[in-house]
Image (cartoon, helix red, strand yellow):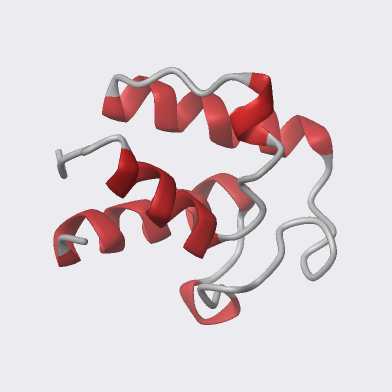
Length: 82
């Protein structure tokens, strides 16, 4: 995983979920650890789709529960930093 993409993805998650970078570890669960609701999860999905020009379907979305999941997903889709 390209370090620039990792930093961009982490920053995007923090901005969307309105949390600090220090609060977000790779394994921090969005719902269980941060109490994020489904509306914010959809907003996060939309922002990733717009910025990285990808489409995340419902089946894929349910498996994206933490930053590590998102990073793995982006790598599998061969997404590049913008």
